[in-house]
Picture (spheres, rainbow, N blue to C red):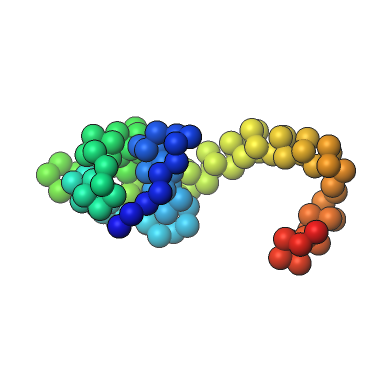
Length: 122
């Protein structure tokens, strides 16, 4: 299974972001086992240390937990925790920049809503 990795971020961060996306989308739910480090490394043709680093960061953020001898599992409340932190990040970091860009482009909310209703057409 080939994945196109970007040069703009380390692969472990990209892998972590993919797992976070799966958590937010409900593809992974509490109690689900993550594939083994070796399996991910083989499937995506990356170094097992890269996979371990991504998994370690997820564990440090309490999104997954290691069960000795049997693997990594999605933690209880992982999605809710992610929603909270991702919403805060969006509102504090991304939204202000979006508002500034809207101001510069002289766009208003009504135009954005109409664009969304029309499938992105302006």
